[in-house]
Image 1 (spheres, rainbow, N blue to C red):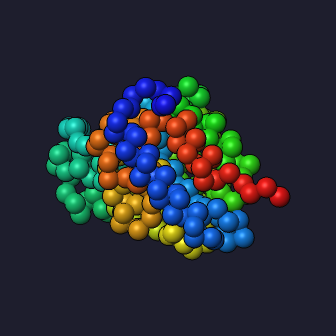
Image 2: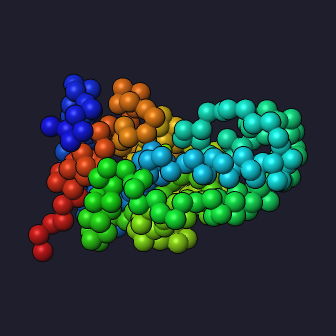
Length: 266
Ligand SMILES: [Mg+2]
């Protein structure tokens, strides 16, 4: 059933739950698929969701910027998956003896420096880092007027945009849209920022796609639905709090496109 074979019973349970939710939404006209009511906003995470193994140069740039801006020289390891760049950097800076006050006063410079240093390090192409099924999914969604694709990522915006551009996914995500680690240190605040930028998009027609428990948590914090893909560092069972868990973008696309987002005949 699954394209990757990664899943067993756990997936079926999650898919059933998702299908039940979709059936429910089909019985509520105007909540999901109807274009005249504005359609669906889908907020994609980047690392572990749209792109795989695309964070090494990003992490290097972040550490280098910590050195440039704060003089940090000792770099401990801190949790990174699902966190915002500022949250990660603050913890590393603290391990390096940088006070919270000093970190905050240099933050704007740090964000700019991180973007510049990433631009120097970014591989010329990240086309081979696109997660399975995601290019195919975005290409189909691009042709669906009832769907708007946007971003919710802990990456700083300059880093996020360059990663997507190098991966050949930049055209799917409009400038001025989305929410990034440069907008808030708290991921929980990002979905609401992305909805606001999309024109105060209603919660009930917004869907977040991510790969970590923190993606699930930020969707919950904003009261929106969340679909998880087990393509990052977490297995399906660790993402069970999501509304549904998928092996990868291909499996996600099958449910989204066939069961929910198929356009009405016109
Ligand atoms: Mg992620």
